[in-house]
Length: 318
Image (cartoon, rainbow, N blue to C red; front, side, top):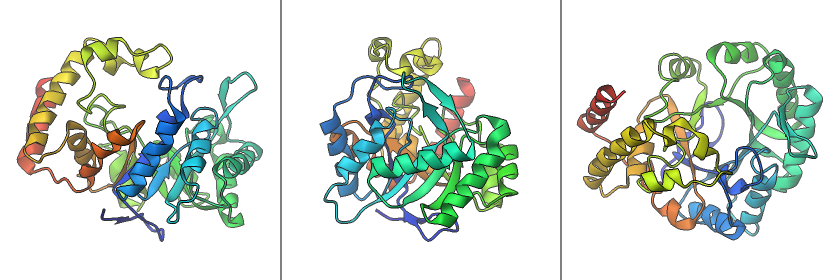
C-alpha cells in the first residue's frame, strides 16, 4: 500500500488507518454493542498484514479497553505501526464520562495510555474534544510539554473548529486534525478543510462510511434491531426518514463499485480520500473479513463522472 507524507512530520502513513472505537466493546456510553476480543485482535493483525501502518484509538474507547486490545494485537509484531490515541475524556469509578483539559489531567491521561498501550512513546497524541472550551489553552500547552518531554512525538486535535485551532496555534503548532467526514457529513468542507490546507495541518477523517451505514452490509431490518448498547440505535442517520434515503445512496455506491470490483464501503472511503486536504481515513473493523472489504479504497480512484453521480444524488435527495 502506498503512503502519504503526514504533513510536516517525518511520518509516512497509508491512506487508511485502523480505527479501534468499536473494539473497545460494550459497557460504556458510546459502545457499539458486544465485541469479541479475539476477533478484535485478529482484525487489527489482518489490517497490518494488508499493509495498514497506523492505528487510531482513544483512552475513552471502552474506558481504556481499546488501548489494551491494541497492545495485545501488537505483541510479537516486528514492524510496529504508528499508534495514535487521544485524551480529554475522563471517567470515574462508576464509568461516568466527563471532560477535562486541565494540564494535570492531560498528563495523567498520557501516562495511563502509555501503560495500557505498553509503549514508551505515542506517535500522535490528540485532544479528543475541545471541551471544556475555556480550558483549550491550558490543555494544548500541556500537550506541547508532553512533546518536549518525549512522551509523544506529535500533537493534534480532533473535532476542533477553525477558531479553536487558531487559539491552539498561538501556543504551539497544530500538526493534525481529526474530524468526521463522509458523503453524509460534509460540514467541514466550506471552512475547516481549506483552513487546514492553507496552514499545513494534516487531516485524518473518521467515520468515512458513516459508522457502517455505507458499507453495503446495513439493512433496514438490521438498523431497526441494533442493540440498545449500540450508540447507532439512537443516531438519526440510522432511523427514518433518513435511513431509507441513506440505503438508497448505498445502492448507487454498489453500482459505482461494481465498475471497479470494489465494495460500496470502498467507494465511500475513496470519496473522502479524493479531497486534496485529506491525508488519511480512519476505518474501523470488528472482524478480519471486514478489513478485506475496505482496504481497496486506498488505491481506488473515482472518475469525475462518478463523483458527479454522487453529487447529483445528494442534491436531489437532501
